[in-house]
Image (cartoon, one colour):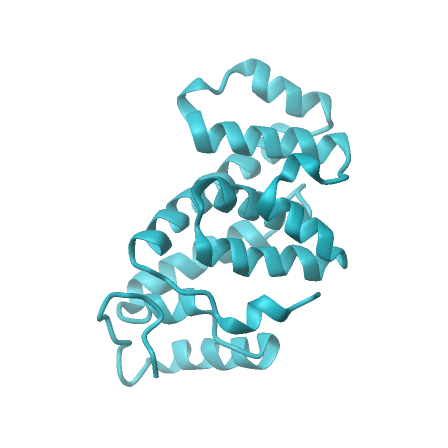
Length: 187
């Protein structure tokens, strides 16, 4: 099996039972084990920490929809030019929205997408956090509040943005490759 990154970090062998079960669930539900999970499998504690944070931010309770969280992931990844996350989360935007053009717009230029003002404000905030987080002001948070975001929602936008900034840097620095299956999904 080809390693999911340019680094020679083979997975723990054998995988712990819980990890093998999680990978089986991924295979069953997604038709693959995402390479990001395979990449972290050299250190089960790091894999568990990564998946716990990802699952909480992307699948846990939030005032943000699953689509909105995926849109943030793609926009942040586009700004950071993270090949892995643009491909993987672009596929998720296409699948969740049912709109292949939306997934492409998120990757190429989110400002060209036909999206409501709420999502435009959310993505502008994510963009600013990605490019210049130290310059975020109360005015920026107020712009989100004006679109109906609660303070908890703003926390979630910031947290998803921060998580993908970290993930993008790790994926790019390690030469993480997206699963080929993502390219054809939801087109």
